Image (cartoon, rainbow, N blue to C red; front, side, top):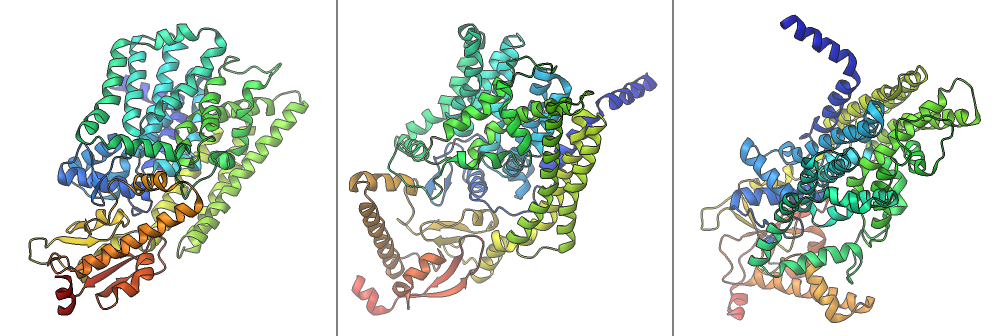
Length: 606
């Protein structure tokens, strides 16, 4: 029995070694050095602060950060992070990022499965490795947030729909389709319906079987599960706080441009679309053209209309997002699996043409395109090294040289394998280069910048300069308006509380909406509203500092340095700076000690 089992394992390893190696490399890519970098980005800082509040204060329905309810995002990613914090008992960065990293691995596995269904093992393998080495996908799925779980739910819904409609699968696939939609709704709201609908409906409409296919997807138990997942949380939140609907409307209206709200990251996602598939630019462009190519005389392992599903998934959603007022690159992350399948199809097509026995104009063109793609992969190392050199404080030249040298070697090895007919396995060197780049970049180079971008050192300085006292609010530390949420994660023994009235009720965007609607949308009116808002904030801070009944233990204040610079005359003689950050690659903070107010000021206030 044992020898037979060993023989089966050896046989399976010989047959499936490309998939096994690709899986190991994907695990290294998404899980390697997951906790070596502090919480830099705003999205994962907020995700960590929400999860900590959920665990510490039992706010499972609606988390609170910065002294206000956090209603902008649905709760499933927060619940998963909070659950891991409870299960592991560890307050570390890798715990916060693990749900997104596992979502990335799930997307890679589902893309392999869908690609294998569409065009066999070569397409599944090529698509999975392209997705795992796409820069935008890799960087986003290694961060905590809502986009990674949303991408996994979107990919699962599209895969379940394919199995139910194209493969004539059983009823369980229809149920799974609705469950995936419901979980996606709990990740980021109704956008999951747009992402999946734009992907599958255009693919079905030309077949003249749209009604029959939709009937196959319809499943009453599945619909009920979807409604329970999608409606339960918003209904409970609205029952507790009817103003939540206004917050959600503001969030969606700001992004789509339906409401008169400006955003600092306005711009069209279409302008940066080619960069979102790097380093696979050539394969991505060729893949987008596949549905309209005739391919006469070329035998490909998929049916004529099969490219339309990934095309609608990627290009269709890109077109919709391009109409939004605010569409950041991370919004496109759930569509990258579709683009990876298109790029995998392009790889198979170009590889087949390039290895044609009889040279033709098409085969020569395919070899040139593949050559350009290999050169782009080789240059990626130099670009990554230059970006690290520019972005990070001090980088060891030896590691930078290694980071720059690995992709050219991988590109040369991949091109050699491709010319010798290894097919999709020729992309394994690129996957290995991606894993090595992650381990070097995230494990060795990026941590050098933790003091400049993170909050651990600041938390240690605050604990030393403003030690906890012994009064009623001994563990409390005041901040004004808003500060970076990452400080919550590292200042574990102190409670950060806002100066009363300084924080927005829900969010700045929601509060600004009321002001914009009442004052008009002209540029002059908006400037006047902003000026009045800042003056009210200045007066509020002065009143709090001078108030004789201010909490006796509220003797230290955190404030953003730009605000302190503008308002320093108002605080002169009232506060003593203990710490003032300078030249940080984030918003710098200042720690102030609030001095006892002069007796004459106290008498005047009384």
